[in-house]
Image: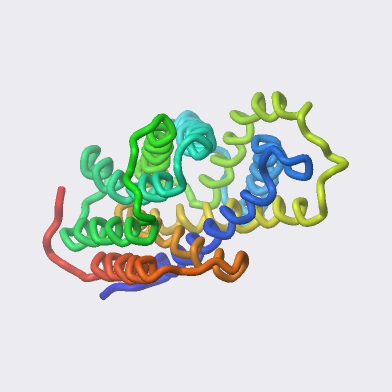
Length: 296
């Protein structure tokens, strides 16, 4: 087995992202006391990106992208933040939660395929096996006795997952040249610029006087935990162990979401979900086994 700082970073990232799902569901929406989605993003993206930029400068990094990175960073942000947000938020409103979870759980598989297709990363045989086992475990966690129906919402969720997988894969060459904290800062700042027109469109529907203190706290928590910390830790892990091995951990996000639902919302975990959690952990364990076999 091999286990290090990058693995710990990924576990913490999944916990932060799971908490963010709970936070966003409560803080962003169409209720009077909620932020409109893109207004919500327009607050947290530049806040986290600006703080990351200041942090990078304090740490002595050169934050000005040069050469091909001047266009690679905005392109990565357009696909990995802007298009992902559009497809994900639109798709989740017109398909079932079971479909969302299962399609989102295909992210590691897409990362493996894209990495191999573009020869950006290699995958050990154990890693591929672990990805498949983890996907099976996630399906058990989300199983509610129904079937996966390929409706428009599911198709949009597939596009969102493809955008996210592309971001994870094509970030690796950039991270070979730039520090993760600098890449994250630019990703979020460009993401805010791309979402600006949609935020302006939603501004008239905002009822600022109806916002509660807890929702303001939620947007700050999302900026600091999910974006400032989570994205930086995820890119750090990719820079250390590559997109394929990092992507396997994505299946932990719905696991943490389920556990938070039990703690915060007092929901009940079914036996089949417990089995699914065990299979997901087994899948991750399989990917940590050192092996000579590579898929390339």
